Length: 220
Image (cartoon, rainbow, N blue to C red; front, side, top):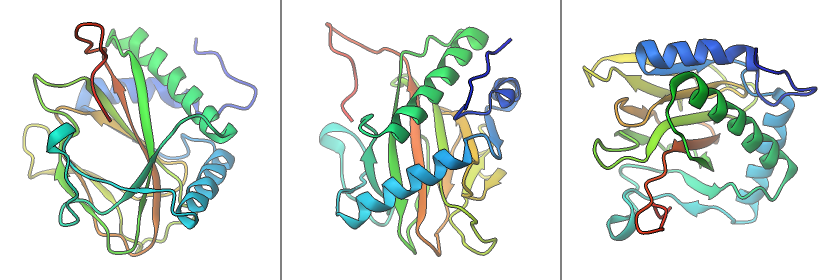
């Protein structure tokens, strides 16, 4: 039995369905998984960061291969650092999910990292994988959406593709507050379609420890 918190940031009733979906198809999408009031607080914080020019233009690649490519990716980001109560509540919820995944699937997830992501109108992210086979310590990707009342014609959907047939669409996720998606980082291609409105989310990754010589990989 999964214990329920007095005011949970995460709908723990969704966790068994989430685990089953990851096993059966490699991805999960659920509505109202993240507490609505928490989404409002996180959305307000992200917009405040944007208003104060406190977001960084997102790039692709890591280390020396890192590059800014607006033709591939157009969001701006800020890594979560537990500075606000809303961030701490969210990260604690993801810690609860990490424990459940480790207990149910024996994944050996070591830590969780996440950043705010704000897509301005017209921005998108072309189809990609979050990790590459044989080089991965990102195991499960997560996306939490923060925009209240996202309209049907707002664009900005995340499209998930079949792991065995990368051209076959298996899910299209409207970026509405409270909706939560997760998928296997190495095998599920995905993209973000062009958005008509400012699109707010938190992207995150559960990771295995890939330390070498006492140094935990990777750089962010």
